[in-house]
Length: 359
Image (cartoon, rainbow, N blue to C red; front, side, top):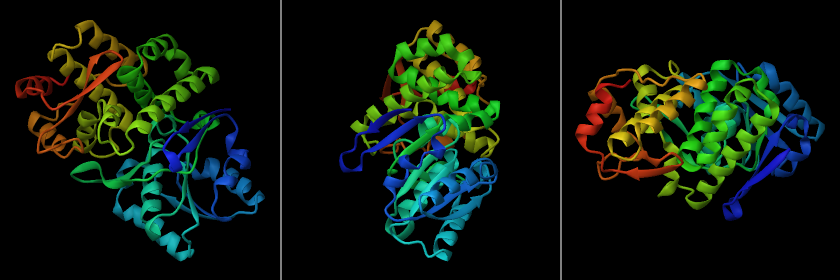
């Protein structure tokens, strides 16, 4: 097991990464404010891991309640979130009752948001079961739900007490979901660490084959980078926005195509290509750099061509992006491979050119 810390003063918390962690009560029990929890999971993950988690908690003397939600991005909304509140109120959960998110990014985001809201804030723990959630969404305290006009537009910054990334759960992950998680891993190399990017190029086959050492390193380095960035800027007032490389375009793709039709990682991958092409037209990246990024994205089993939604549709959904400031869109682009920049100075003609030919 490897452990690193997200350093946020009195809200700091550990991230544990390794195999077989679901059975290790000593990693969770000390973080419970009382011996009561509500496990939030979904119809896909529950049959796989809920019994194991419940047995571990009950062995530690914990009373376990549960709510099983429908699976998928299409259910990341108010109606589904209300099912969590219904369960908490029915069970008479208290302010010290801990919510445990057992699942991927959708479950983690909704559970965290429910925890932020219920009785104005109760503790929660992240147990991410997908690669995407292990390397990205479970870390950093972003929680929320989608709206028909924009992804993740309703939510809160709310940090977990601990993140438990059990790499054994990746063995039941469909290949498409594994690739979707690799999009966020690639993102860290593109924005922060050119050496990590080169390592990914050399080890992508091992990652897709779930080589234990390769996967553990990819998760650890991704979380390490994210922890460094979040530690500097918890509420995304500045540098944290670089973690959104590809997301302004990607969220527009997810919204425009209908939530769930493109997985989040697939949309981010295509969005990163659009961001790289925009960076090239801004004079920062060479054509070879763009192709290098595209080749790695393809090697991960991800799309490197965005859907043609039409310029107006892209601009409509991108106008709802959380980085919009003073009515002006801001973009995360690449000054070079391994270095991101946040800018609101993308000429309209460049943006229109990139979006007119999304490929």
